[in-house]
Length: 214
Image (cartoon, rainbow, N blue to C red; front, side):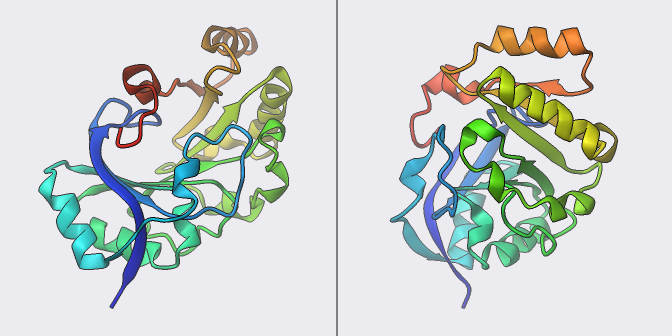
């Protein structure tokens, strides 16, 4: 029997990435090997509830949404995340995976849209980036940079060029750290440098102040 440790399952609007604004069911798995300085979900590091795969699927179905986001913590820290992703796809759902970029993504079902972070220096975890993942990404996927400073921004620019990310993936996302970097400042940097990236802010933080369950 496949079991997972789940922090929460909830229905909300997707706050970021390509599907921002869409009603989405979020399945937040417990646990994460990273400790990013600006992490906004430390409550997912431990605790949680053990649920069977079937129970998770039943809970997702009760919300009636077509879009499902598997997130964390770091969902891929639980090996059972892989059969969960496949089962959600088999159920006919539009599935995305939010992953921190330190875990191997090779086993992720090809139908899943991977939203993979590359951790910038100010996160404190840039040394954990698994660059072997990048050749596995396709136009179906997205790469996200969470940016706290001009140093982070310049680093992200370099990585975009080094790995030709705008040509490799569907979207490259630049997101300012909430209350650390003004969104307007980041927007002006992107425009000045004519970057081929998508600027984003975290919608849920403006709507619900990052309350759990939203």
